Amino acid sequence: MASANVAQWISSNIQHVGKDVLELGSKRYKEHAFLDLPGLLAEHGGQVSLTGCDISEGENVDVVVDLTAPIERVKAALEDRTFDTIFCVSLLEHIPDVFSACRNIEQLLRPGGAIYLSVPFVFRYHGYPGDLWRFTPEALLYLFPGIDFRDHEYSCISTLEDGDIMALKGKNMDKLNRFLFRPKSREEKIERKRAKSEGKRVPAYSLAPAMINMLGFRKQELPL
Picture 1 (cartoon, helix red, strand yellow):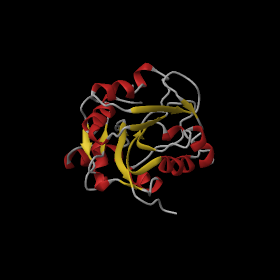
Picture 2 (spheres, rainbow, N blue to C red):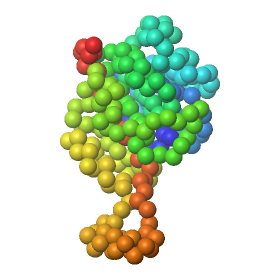
Picture 3 (tube, helix red, strand yellow):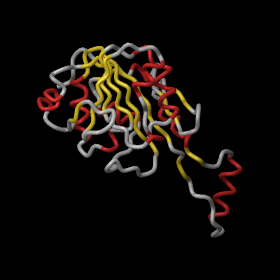
């Protein structure tokens, strides 16, 4: 789900987009979930070479490739090109072998190049065709060891509510709790426990939809 907040996050960090851009998972599936990266870049006056890549043919797709294939096959499909900017928005949750995909994605990015990653932390099931994973900021640090996220300087968490964006700078994972609907005061917590002890029904905890949006830059040398 490419929400309005994801587009807003990209726009606020548009200065890091280079000239050779690769969009992964570029196919237009549903209108409300379509990022329209070409339009977004054009809106900001970016003169870029944009390549759309997906696992199947369709609108907005220039290259069809399986990102989990051996890296030689992935690079061959892309004519052995590397890119100075990669967009990977609402894609990783749909890839069964996400570990191989992330290793390959790193190798498609030039040293110093920027990668824009947006993944669901909490979200409903949405199969395109399948929906397999949810992520934390720590998960992206693990999956992309060759990327410098610069202490989350350009990263954030967002919900689907317009304008609801929270900075991640400082790696304070406790901030994720902002998106946990729960009693807000000590008195509410005590009352909830009392009601439960009396066998009364109390509202269950629930999580608001939340996306992890992280911008990082490829290190000069990738880890072995």
